[in-house]
Length: 396
Ligand SMILES: *Cc1c(COP(=O)(O)O)cnc(C)c1O
Image 1: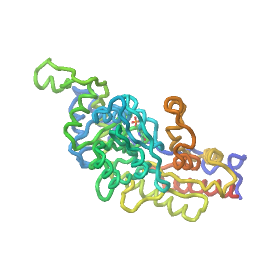
Image 2 (image 1 turned 45 degrees about the horizontal axis):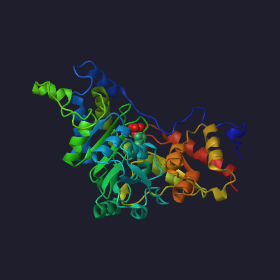
Image 3 (image 1 turned 90 degrees about the horizontal axis):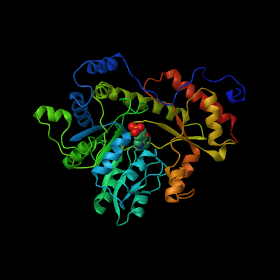
């Protein structure tokens, strides 16, 4: 058996393979340069062009560009009318921003545990957490797989809740043939460089609701009724601030990058799915590695490829396996430390280990493997080879 790199053996790869990476080509760069040479550097024509193209792609009436996915979540919470005392149900197994956005508007996050198979929020748990203060639910399409929206939307209708879908992982995913972005009250996307397409930083909210769209647009511009471009078009200096908003605008040159990236998205998703299938097949005969279940009624956008380790059959824990794989040159990662276990949440809400047992058990076993469209077949093979080498070395 090959000596593990962590024990002084030869690493599987001599160069480090990250878990994700943006892809920016000369066309993308030219699109940005063109805008930098134009009249509008921010809040110009590229904003609405990017918004309209994304809205069309996801099948929504409106899309509103914001300066980050986090700003987009904050704006969605504002547009939903969340205020002090309101409860919003969300998953503990996400990036902290999913719950932080609730606190920005003085709402109270209430966590509902996840399903074991997909690690998506469990509709049965949502049901248990509903009180007369519940106003909204924020499901996260973990790794790029849509949640159980038939059930979630039914529960939301019955209890008069707004569904704010955190689809930072799920641009291009589908649920029962419907594109993510077309069915929730509001759907939030992120264009951080590790996500499907990038604008550097950036985000978008898609919605079919014109009232939400108006509030989202004002919120990103200080709560002001007209933006600079609209004022120039109407030849008026007059505006009024009617909400407490922020400067959450995305620039025109970032939108130019987003537009150029969006053209490539369908091909990139196909490539992500191809790599995921290749991994699925390779791991199907390794008993200590279990990929998350890919449900048959969704089209998974595979932002992440996540596996769970069968710790009962291994002599090492997740951290040891993580470290051994990093030593092999494989950029594994962990998504996520459950939000309720972060010190801020423990201090503010007295959350503690044991509160969300399914998410916590998953957290102890999770590993994210490298997955991005520009990975070569050789890279994929290296990942598989390194994973096999490491888990074999630690088999109980
Ligand atoms: C990336 C991400 C966000 C935040 O997006 P930013 O653009 O980085 O602000 C929110 N939620 C989830 C689930 C994410 O993965």
